Image (cartoon, rainbow, N blue to C red; front, top):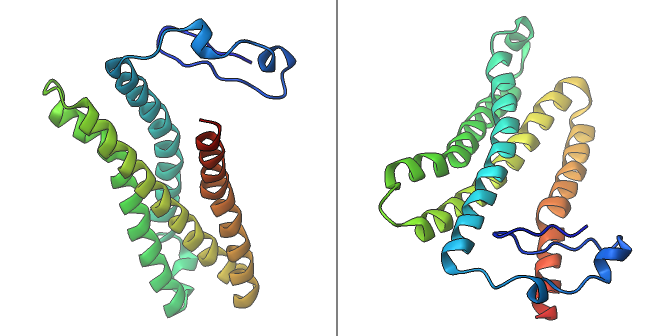
Length: 182
């Protein structure tokens, strides 16, 4: 599929025959100006933030509600400590993922969009790392209650390996592949 518009670079789907045979975006569109690029990046960050914020807020709400369940009082010291760490990580990820909105609100109109986009991108990465850690701790907390401790740790390790592959290894490999093509 090729997506083209005044502010979007063409995106090609290698599984689509018409896309792989289509001329490159440089043949169809003029290069982005610096302003168009920063506006596109900001819009992409907003979309990414919406997705991440929704997930982290649902998870954080779930975590907060756990402390008010009858079974919470039966948790051992390790599980209570893990809960506190998990809630702190969840709150930190919420802060990092919502920070771009606050930064934009405070700096709007000051012609600092390049700096805002750079800071927001870094905060998004930080927020995603914190979110992955929150998910790992949440899984460990739940699986510690449901299964044997060793089984819980193995499952969490495998899930976190999968997160690392999906969220970091694949994007980094694609980035490297893109740089080699240029």
